[in-house]
Image (cartoon, rainbow, N blue to C red; front, side):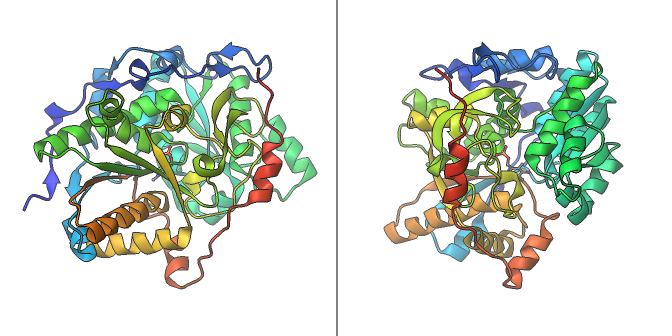
Length: 450
Ligand SMILES: *Cc1c(COP(=O)(O)O)cnc(C)c1O
């Protein structure tokens, strides 16, 4: 019984896959936040190489050797067959999962963090500024910066800074400077603290502080952990590896399932496969994006032009959005609380190549515990959203007798999320309804673009 598909280091991808070469219709351009004209990423914030990748139409983009060496410190990741979960569910479906929780930071995020640190270093940047909520992105970037000798400044949402100290310690261990946001170190931070000294912070405020920091210093650039095309590009190492691993098992999936916050881990997994659907080789392939009911961007948002950030300083993208001013309820899958979604995912959804589903957090944790008790892995609450849908699909196969092959994108482990598991196990976890009024209010405030 084969449970793992192992790749050797020699079989690892040497190039990232760029979906922009194969889209049936090109992506709509980004718009400048002030002029509303088509724009690149703001050059003082991003290095040239990443700006080029953002708009490139080249199908294969080489992964520099030096970066491949860094990838080898945790890649290739394993692809497992979930025999024990299949047995628990008594399903004829075969379930495979690609597990990114074995990176040093415990998620897929280092795949882009090390790449971003590399390109910044190449262009003479000394220091990166970023924001983090619960600390997953901040810790990945802290590790990337330490590999390439860059300073790293992380604005961490104040509530998480005090409630979830372990990821802060992780970031500091990798040498990053972490500061609770709002802080006294930026103009926007000082302004917010003056009005509300006890402000607990939000991801939007932290983004604004990191952006201000990068604008203010010549040696500093800004770094974003999801949503943008170049981030999704870097994450395609996941799908390219998974495709080769499944080939070794003589499998092509019928259904691919992943969670979407900004869309990077799942796009990284399915983009190499969606090419086969676009080109008609696998017309029946189903790609299911899973989001929380409390932040249902694709299933309930508008397809509209909106700012990438709360302050309206980031470029405007055509995407599904709940409104840039929308602050979702404090659900435990902190990585799934973004108001917008990667334009690439939205575009593919609009064109009918991917579908989306929203799930409540209590059934999500039920699925996560079932997974832990069959496969042993305690999944990140974000990834558990995908587990929920995989289990549902496998149970449908039990009803119909169909032998489908399902691929689960398992983006990370939940070892820093045990307080959430504790709430669930002790019956204290609550569900959040879709906050319709908050969304309607936020959607009234979209920028006007012709
Ligand atoms: C950040 C995070 C996510 C959500 O981000 P995406 O860009 O949608 O992948 C999902 N899972 C884990 C484990 C994360 O850390």
